[in-house]
Length: 117
Image 1 (spheres, rainbow, N blue to C red):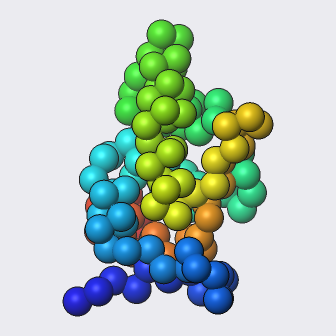
Image 2 (image 1 turned 135 degrees about the vertical axis):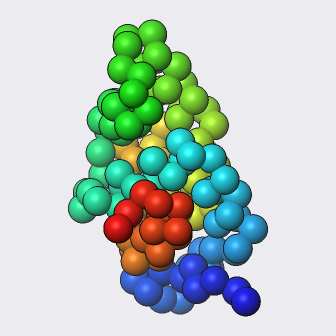
């Protein structure tokens, strides 16, 4: 059974369907699940610092040193993978992050992971 991971808002685009392999790889790390959960609740792009603050709070690791580690991890590892999967847009220069798909695409998977009711 193939999951319906098409963005209903993105008709006709070559990136409109996310393969199950990429989708499950994106969801394989809990930190990426936190990122997607937060972005699914936001109607517009936000700065990496805001996203980092959310992840630090959820992970209960809000020290300054830990904050820097989370920024580096998101910037170099998690956001590029989510961008490659077609789930987020991330601009390295402005550090703006936003969902690249409708929240309806990822919310069912976030429910399965226990992040959304």
